Length: 296
Image (cartoon, rainbow, N blue to C red; front, side):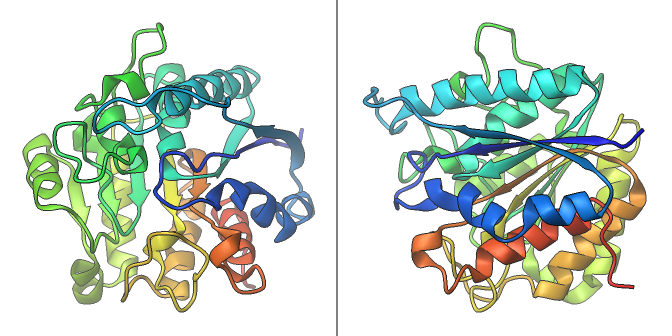
């Protein structure tokens, strides 16, 4: 029986400071995602998009928190339903705040999971440390139980991810307090200079060993701003000197070979800032490679 993939888009840009990333799911689909996955032999169920409610309240240092929490709650339910059917959930963003909902569902469904977070940023702030109040800078901290809890507690009692099984790859714009909090919590970080020194082949090998040992598998959360802006211009929080395209593909190809992926997010594609959907196509191809597409 062919494996079934459930694709959910989340039209969310309220966790970020720039608008437009809400159109990311459409751009990734237009990049040939569903057709490409079907060619790989999967049954593809496109479940459509979740859309934030209008209005909503903010708290100090938690901008648009009501809408962020609501969308994460609905995504949590959507991913939970997919997992209960034995399907593989793919979440298309949308800003990175949505990963709080998807990872929460995976963490509850499986006894123990690892997380690989590929991103130029740490996303390990909370309401006490954030310099901006933008909630797309908080989901990694939230799913690990370091706040803000509102991002992951929808009345179900959150199941937090063990930080000893969490890996951040490609960081090059991590706030000082984030860095200290991640280190204190025991998150393994391979910043961009570690990739320069060790090479992506060794970095992703170590990451899979950390996130995959003693767990039922790995949740991949991939922010396209991890890739250098020349190759991925369509994102709102560009940081120079990022991963090359081949480093990004090597990471997801190696994850595919490991057979340990449980779910994945592809986030922060902003078509307004893109060039002829260059980043949308790249995001689509990265997802396909993470699920087994090969170059030969």
